[in-house]
Each structure stands twice: as C-alpha cells, then as structure tokens.
Image (cartoon, rainbow, N blue to C red; front, side, top):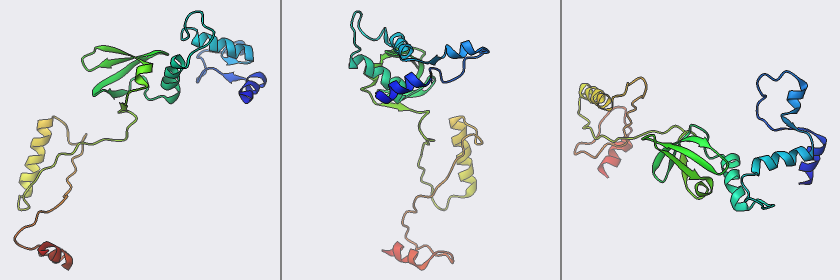
Length: 196
C-alpha cells in the first residue's frame, strides 16, 4: 500500500487504457490522469459510490468481490459466447454489479455478478480451436468412389462447404480378420500381433 501511495504522490497514473480521441491541449491530457492522492480517492469514490449501501462509510467484501471478478479476473468480454448452466449466452453488457446476457432466442438475462462468481462459465472465444468427431465404420474393401460419395452426402446433409470445414479421415484401428495382413511394406511383427 505504501508503494502505491508513493506512486500516486510522485507520479501520474493514467485512468484510461486509450487516449481520448480529439485531445489536442495539455489540459485535456491532465483531465485523464490521476496526479495526487486526493484525485485517486475522488476517482475511487465516484466508481464505488453506488456499490456501498447508502450512508455507510465502507464497502463490504460481498459488494467489492463481484466487481473484482468481472473486471480484474475477466472471465469474459463484451460479445463473447459463454455457456452457463448448460445454456449458451452472448455477453451484451457488463456493469459493476450485474452482467446482461443475450440468449439464443434474443431474451435478455441479467445475472448478478455475485452469482456469476459461484458458477462455472465456459467461454468459447477464449477456448482453443474445437472439433467434433463422428466415427464411421467402413469395411476395408469399400471402393474409394463410395467413400467419396459418402463424404459428399455428409457435407450436403450438414449444409457446409468443404473448403470452410476440412474433413479429416483417420484410421483408428483395423478390426481382426480371418486372413492375416500380408504386404511387402508391413513389418513381420504385424502378422505375429494379428495371430496373437
């Protein structure tokens, strides 16, 4: 705390992440910076005046933690697609005490940030690339033309374009057959494993 007060007394802290557009004078630049302890207290008072109960001198931890959760821990941002309690929602508005979400049917849902603090939130925009997997069992003797036709029918059925969503085919396993695998390229250990 002592270090923070020294920074406030001897330096300047910007209150904005970006410069305000169309600022041309030095006076306008000073309006966006905290230059004294008094200005820091004034800014904090303006930010949290509606958080504390009317007439109280202190902000309770129950009032302060939701704001810290949303704005410091930052589990989501405006426009992110999240999943809360199994329902996909889009973040529409973030406030100190509440967050407004938009459901798939355009219904607005307001969650208190104190409730969001206790829920598991899946944020799809912060997640790495995701994929779906569908397993097909195709006989090894199936001709390539039938496999190509199957691919086209799947893409037509899903109504997606092949260039947008690449289709990867991976052979996970070959079921045991009555005839051993014989090939000039396969190692001899394959035939031994097949008979085991």
